[in-house]
Length: 190
Image (cartoon, rainbow, N blue to C red; front, side):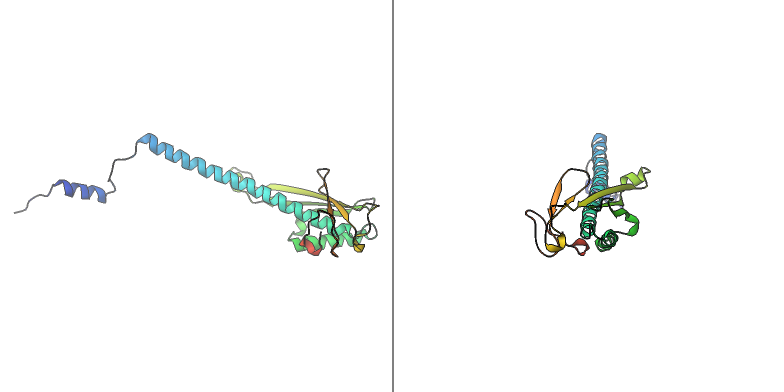
């Protein structure tokens, strides 16, 4: 004789196997959770894009300063050699020739100007139809007539081209200006 088993324990076990244990969340709670997840994902994508652009800008600014420092070392006497030194510094910093827009001595022969351009790897903007974000950085290194030659250990002054701020930099032989940082990108100490 078969006895149907409709005991409460059996019904609960069957319901749990189907994924129905517990009361379902109300619709407003599910909507709220989905909204929070969507907003968090969008904020993460926007943050990624902003940081990618900022990182590219910072990297290009540093590389431009290193190139300008390498080029100004040979001014005012050898502008062609200054351009070669800047190109060598760009290669050592990891810049491709297509990223260097301009690297040349000024007409007066007392400053070296560098312009570099790169593309930031963005995600959200690509999804919205913007294929790429170009980032440009400028740097100018100037030789002051009152400064001694960098080959003899004297200081030179670097400027980022946008603000009026100048940073004292020392030559690669080890002499340092007060407050100057030391860097080796491009093979030239700055």
